[in-house]
Image 1: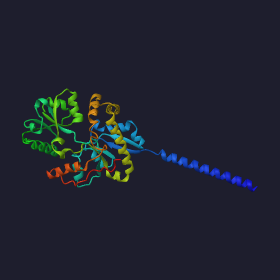
Image 2: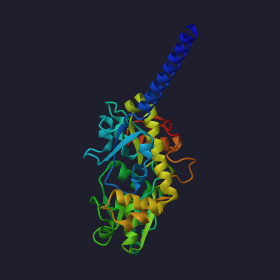
Image 3: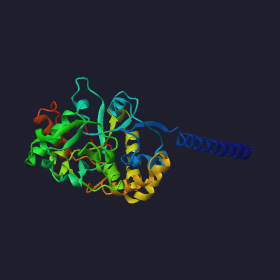
Image 4: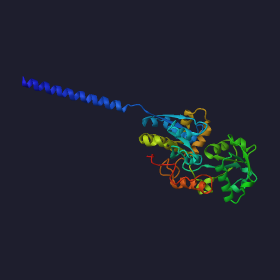
Length: 333
């Protein structure tokens, strides 16, 4: 009888252990299949090859692998920074020169740059070869399409003066150029462009052009354009998700670096309204620009970041933005 009681107790014990194991497995499985973290990412403009890494990460499942449900949206009229600052988006895209008001506002805006999409400033002045604008001083007497922005014109004046030219002799034409090849063949001699898109468009249009890059003339103008910005309240409250997002984005841009043609196909598949030839040529050019000589994609060089804002302050173009303010590399793997 006692032997049977012991046997029954042993069986009950085994059964309890089995039930406990099943319960633990079910609990673990439930935790492992939790809902994905929702993230909103706002662009700076209509989709283009600056954004390829995000679309690759979406298409190849890098976001999903990181437990993220990412929605990519177009920017509002007042730009991505306002949407990020308000908390409507956790991440966005902006440019270091356009972020000046964010970092000098009396009302502190919870925005910080967390990664560089392209390692160097690829913007410069493009013109037709027949106009013989091979350096900044050659813009004297030429018609330049200006956005009428103080920082824009100050940068242009500085490079022209540095090159021995007279900025006052440049004919400023207030015009926001959306079709560079057409503008250069009509009423404009010189346009400020980012080569990966508008420069490629002139190439595909069969135009012979000259271009000089601001970073090659004045070191302080090798600032970051564009960068990924984030809401700092979100960064502080959910560091793990922020790191996971940037890691997935990094993988997307590294794929675009190693496989530019395939990345171009993915971008066109995700955004079918884009011109395939334009995207492919742009992607091939940008493959060497995303990371350049940096040890890892996304790294922001503190010296270059600080140097640009110091130049603006020294030239009376902005209030002082202290060194180290406005960016961080802490969320990059």
